[in-house]
Image (tube, rainbow, N blue to C red; front, side):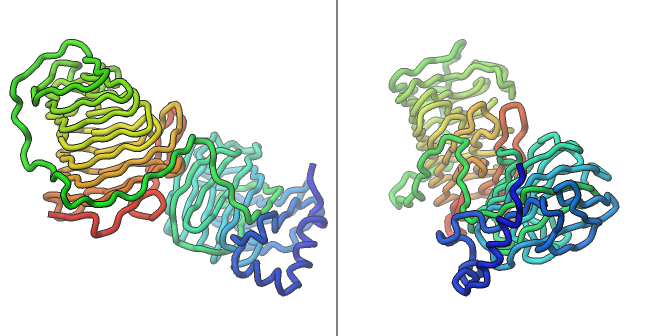
Length: 454
């Protein structure tokens, strides 16, 4: 049932005549005085008063605002105030025609000009994408397949709070991250080479916090310890070699005496391989060299500690953290990991310190498509990396964080090593989408002084 706009938007516009309300709105809607709906239009009165057109063929028909031309390169309708800062905007959107797979129908927030805004788009390809649009430059902040189809209504919502931008389709987050392109602006209804209808537009000054993933307290930034043990400059020589034919369970503390353990799996990337060591909750594995083949390396079923453990040739993963809340890797090193070294599937925080990594895809990856979407954290301190593409990959839409201190990167004159790469986490069965990288003070924490190139 639609609510008459005469009872929603017009009283607000009359109130804007009062000086105090004008000042509060102009200062930004993030104030507690406006933790409520401040704009709404259901188009049930048959007109589009208060909207400003830029391109396209628009009309209010059957209680919805419709743009009917698929030939329009950009068609937009703007509303609201240019001083709006922190808010969420929501609308029901129905695509009625796409001229191509890249055509779009969508919603925008913080439109500081006709070509600068955050846009949540339903694409002709069937995907939804949250975008930072600055003229012809479009940066993806995440996307997901939603099966966008013509004739179907979708509820789109954009939340903008400080530098954090999130986009939702039918209540499910499809994109998000930190971006500072524009900090204020109007709302907009947008199409590009597509036709569509819009209804039930509302703007609320209170921004909700996503609650889908179970949350954990992010760790504090590591405090550098001048007396910490530096990662060894060379790889250790094993005292002897032990062939292993089955997974070694570790219920307490296992001290390998710097022996090399090998013999599980085929040395490849198959996800069905057994681990070399399986640590029970609270267990410690130390002074071990894991040779090839090593299967799926080490599995931690709960909190665990790995001290001075070395992987000579990582197979599937060096270690997988599956349960618990705190996992510590202190000393040791890993090399020849074509994909990743440490895989974080469970909740909590992984601490990696005094560690050496060589020739790896990623040192750490927070699972982006596990069956449970936990919030995960990693803290790296006193790590030396050589020939490693990425130090950490995290999912910003689930609130993951990565913190770095005393990182040394060797033999990288072009500085191609990526410190912190951000992904859009997705349900199991889908593939995560990369949405950005770099320090932002929200998910990726480090400064230039934390990274040394040699």
